[in-house]
Picture 1 (spheres, rainbow, N blue to C red):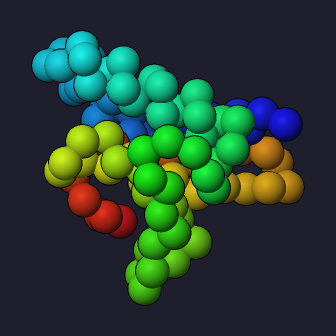
Picture 2: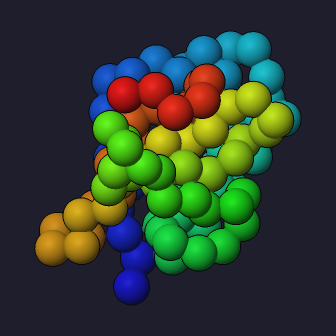
Length: 90
């Protein structure tokens, strides 16, 4: 089953900034997003469930300092992407 990927506004801004500044990272992000759509809780880029105020969200490593933060709605089969820059922000 493939999940649909939905970008929230901050994630869209982050992705647009990556497109302007780093094509190699954009390729990495696309690869990770394809993997998330197929299996959101396992796979490449070290999927990790987040804790505390980010409980219910997951992260995957883009690079040493940046993460994709997302949540999964199993009922609607949608993965919501919250951000793609930085580390564990709301």
